[in-house]
Length: 281
Image 1 (cartoon, rainbow, N blue to C red):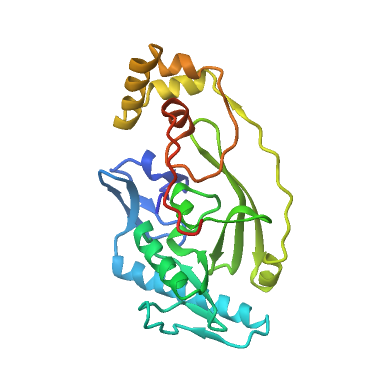
Image 2: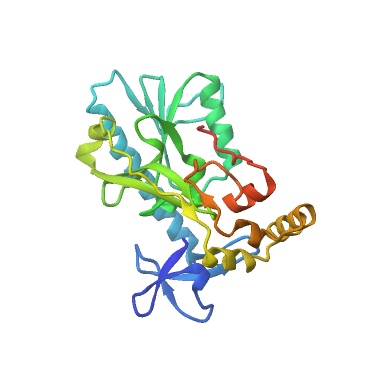
């Protein structure tokens, strides 16, 4: 988890936490431990066994909830954990043996996700993924982007289920805004009994304004000392004989599709528009 409460009940982001302080889970209120690695900083429950049991319960309850709601559509068959030997996979919920629903609660890397999605596609099975558990949040984060899909009604979107409170949350019209790819989205929440309404939901799209690079943004770039940023700055200066900061001041950044692996300022300076690995797109 990426945030926990301190002893005063204030929610603290893991990146801002102090190693000597005590922190508590927002859901079960048990004490958690701050973990810092080379790749990320996060909170973890002290007792992983108890946590795993809790995660299994969350997944089981969510799977049952989804299956119950799908049955209201009067489908021919709704099966759980049906084994597909051709791809060695068990969809959480299999509808009419044509549509697989997956309720993904545990963290999964994009390679494994891609393999599972490709497996379904090889059998021409439509697969719909609903995230929850470790992915549960009230806004879209970078770790969610591997799950996004696209359609004309919702734009770039993803579906989330809080099985504890029996709430479905759809994030739609997800976009990158500004030079640093800030993730913005619209969202709507549905109770369990409103599950059919999700698929009839036709929202209006909010108009997003372009962002002009100002002094604050320039100073933010100036402070970026990671290897990739330094490389972009150095190569740009060698090629253009002008600094990135001078070049970008006053530049306009229109909203972009949330598919790029580089922040917008780097894409403009390098001319390289590399896409993330997003299996559903």
